Image (tube, rainbow, N blue to C red; front, side, top):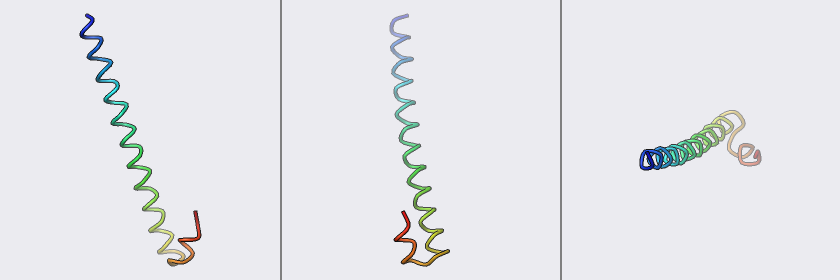
Length: 51
């Protein structure tokens, strides 16, 4: 029972780590996508000025 519990905790830790990594990459992808869209809409100069 003890080893099973340890296994569950370790798996949960791993899952949390993976989801955190996925969240980060999704945010980065969204930032890049937003930046590209702004460049297409407003041109390079105004895209750089926007946050």
